[in-house]
Length: 182
Image (cartoon, rainbow, N blue to C red; front, top):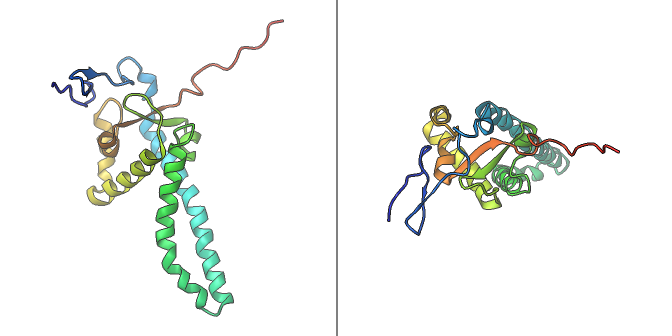
């Protein structure tokens, strides 16, 4: 069996011994990768707000509930952190696993996540994508994001590990239905 590598210039190893090319080539389709890193950064900030709003509301609820129950409700604060983590993982899994393969922030920025062979995302991939991002940022510092500057597909470390790529959406680049001419 031969290895074709999964780098930006080669394809990926297949069980039949061949090499399957990537679905998205930065040399022949540069429009798919134009401005993706900037859009990803802004999408991340939007998603951070989308995740934070329910979390803040949850903390406020627990605070008020604690006041009403003379402090007993504050025991729920120990559930707030695990609930925050679960909410973030479910958010990323459900939105990336949805029909658009994009979180709300990614939709606003007109980008989407695909596998290296072009398939849309799915729940487990979206959840794992989020977990690996946070783990890589936590252990390897935010400088790990610089990896995207040194490859043609603008993939970050967790994208390379998972075999994903973030591209500009097809939806808005395709022309709308033509007007009727009669």
